[in-house]
Each structure stands twice: as structure tokens, then as C-alpha cells.
Length: 161
Image (cartoon, rainbow, N blue to C red):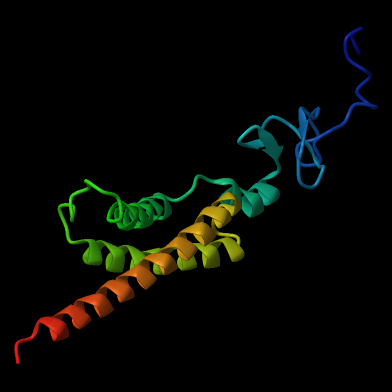
């Protein structure tokens, strides 16, 4: 018997799997879901099949991408700091090594992450960070190559004879 607060059972939405009263609808496909079928991703409700499709795309940004992005940014900042007066000539490691390593990793890791995102295995929200990191890594590699060319020029210019 229906109470005053709920509609009759015949008109209320039902979960197609368990034939129970629906407590949510799938954000992606609109299927009615009972409490047992509801999977929450963030604050949105999904059915099991949609959660399997959408879940990896909503996850956190991978730590490897965040770490490499920080390393690439450190390389850019170290190069910019070289042109400021009063800044020490080098940090704990040689700047050319930092530029080379951050440039190489900054091209490799984000490229892998972009491929994962394109296959639906990575969070879509990491796409912009991966693209920016690759661009800045290319700048790091350019500065790395320029520093190598400058070093070779210095060696030839300072060679006796």
C-alpha cells in the first residue's frame, strides 16, 4: 500500500536489474538504478557498464606526469634565473644536465600519457597539462642544445694554438 509520501509502486521508476525502486539514474545512459547498482564517481551516479567506460577518464592526474611537469618547470626557471643579476651560476646540479634530463623526460612521459588518454585509460583532465609539459620540454631541449653548442664554441675558442 502506498503512503502519502511516495507514489504508487506501479508508477515509480524501477531498477531494471533488481526490480527495486530507483534511487538514481545513470549520468551517462539514463538507466534507473537501485542502491546496489549505483556506482559513484566523484559526485555523479553511473551504472556498472558506464562506470567501467568513464571511470579511468575521471581519475586523478598521474603522479608521474605531475613530477615530470615540475622537473620541466624547474628547468625553465633555472634557465630564466641564469639571466638575472645576483643569481648563482648553477644550482646543485649543472644546468645543462637539468635541461637535458627534463627535456627528454618531458617529451617522453607526457606523450605516453596522451596515448593513454586517447585510448580511454587516462584522465581527460590531464590532457592540457601533458600538452603544456611537452611544449615546455621542447623549449628545455632547445636551451640544452644551445648550451652544448656554446660549450663547444668555448672549447674551440679557448684551445691554445
